[in-house]
Length: 98
Picture 1: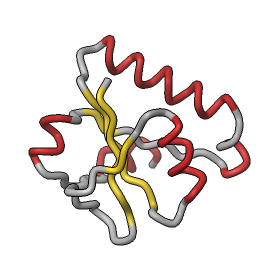
Picture 2 (picture 1 turned 180 degrees about the horizontal axis):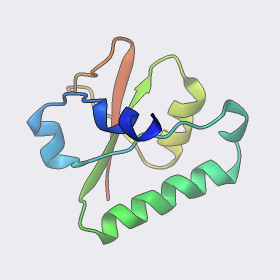
Picture 3 (picture 1 turned 90 degrees about the vertical axis):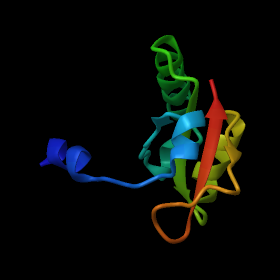
């Protein structure tokens, strides 16, 4: 079931977003782990691996109401992409060049 979840979830993002930020980062972290260095180090490791494999940018879709996730991503250099449309209501798109 877990494998099928990732293969069946087909969010649609504009080509202009994918052109500049070809990698989608989906990170689900327990709220009590967001302040820890483990979540931060995990994202840094993922971004390093993406860059080493040729990706030029990464984006993520975050709930606008999830202040902890927003703060984590901003602290890692992500910026809100104001022109990008989220695939779910109440979400915002953040991106970062690698």
